[in-house]
Length: 60
Image 1 (cartoon, one colour):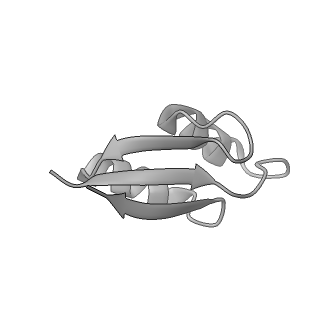
Image 2 (cartoon, one colour; image 1 turned 45 degrees about the horizontal axis):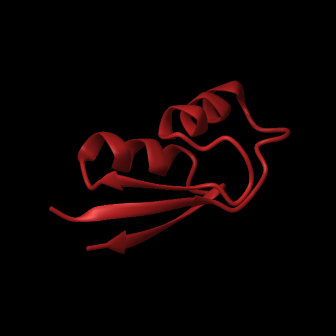
């Protein structure tokens, strides 16, 4: 199964509370944090919510 490498590239300061909660749910706590998650619709939706704060790469 494919995996996604999610990196927080921008600060959440000034963002909506929903965006902060989504970053926390993904496991991102601070700038330049990186997490690897399975490529599932749940994670794709979360990434779509905060797409302006993160970058996503597919990893095998």
